[in-house]
Image (cartoon, rainbow, N blue to C red):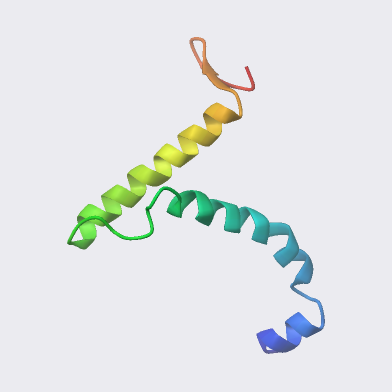
Length: 77
């Protein structure tokens, strides 16, 4: 069955509605603050920059969710 026919029959609609908002939000966080273009020449340096950006976004998200440290990591302090 091709994807277009499966979509018309509603087989992907529930998954699409469930996951699309978070995917869109994640992409928006990634490209925010003028990060739409790569900064360096070369794949390796840009992969490192992207990895660091993603790590920073994930850490910011965890802190906003209440990540804390009291001898061990605790979420929801």
